[in-house]
Image (cartoon, rainbow, N blue to C red; front, side, top):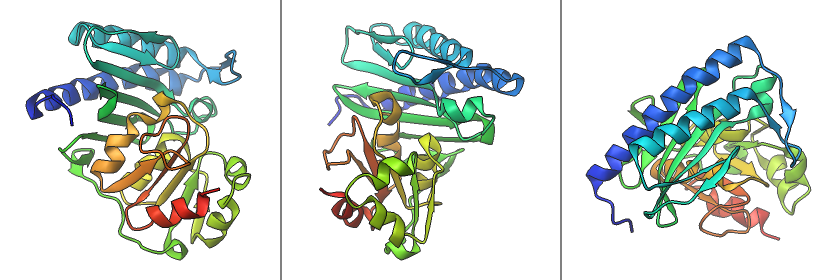
Length: 256
């Protein structure tokens, strides 16, 4: 468990929420103006909004929490002098952002001794912000949020960022076939829907730490489960999130 007090966790959560709000002002202004993207070396898109928002957050957290580390998608890592590290994806869902689709968000996590304890997902264009801190519950726009209680896949809504990657893996096609509804409302918004009880399963065959660190405390505090695709307890390069009633069945279907 963390050696941070409840009061310290609340303070760090407040900082994360304020950082998300500030980043959102920059991001939405450019979103409504329209921006173009360029490809990075890994062939993923980046925009001026991604860069400006991450630089803003780097400066903000450096001022508010000196000594903490920082890992961001666009500018890499700055090592810290204490066990705390901010992990940020300024715009999760850049492809959606560029195409004018509002299902993108800013992800901010506070990791302490290797465990994400605070998470914020701010979906600026749709006006939804979810947040959580370990042991303090999960919230959507200030109201407590919980995963759904549906217990059968035949009733469930299953989401994925990339359906092709899902069906290329063991069990993926069967999972989609059995679901009541299968949709590609992906990236961070898929996890928002699971954490708030509007979908039951979210599948991400490939991702990075900054894509998922903020989501772990939110999903778990909302009563759900999240793990790496093979079942590792801490997601790092892939993720499966589900309500508690369906998690074991979903993981069993996806096991090689």
